[in-house]
Image 1 (spheres, one colour):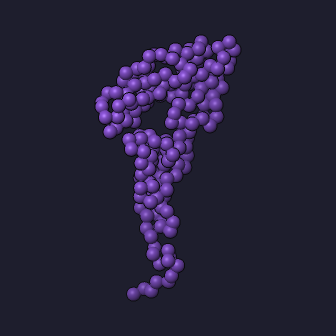
Image 2: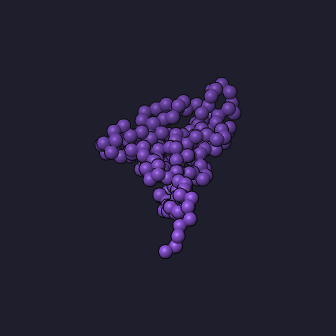
Image 3: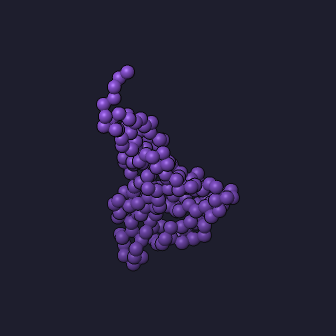
Length: 178
């Protein structure tokens, strides 16, 4: 099983849309779908054809160029359009007539470059008894696995840490050299 959106999501998010793989066991089943309130037919292995409010038609490229979608909450009010993040990103700061500030917690979210793999939802740090930490959620592909105490080691970006356990220190005893 593999989620083709791991490979093709940029096609959809680049158009301010959401990628969906309806059948993880078959090839070429991924589609791009409009993100509400936009509507339109899905795009089979490509961008969908979405329509939105007039303000988003005019200003939507600001959002889609950042992988976000445009929302016009009131079609009768001018200047109220906003950019919103598309999953798995979460909004930190809304984008009023500008791009939103979006973050991705690569330890808590399942995605192709995350510590929690989208194909089987397994946390690659946890299965090794280590903890995942995403030091900067605004930057992608920077998560690290860290050793669990009392083990020590240097975190490695996007991989398990090389942990060592000093059994004498861990047991709080003084070991004799010999």
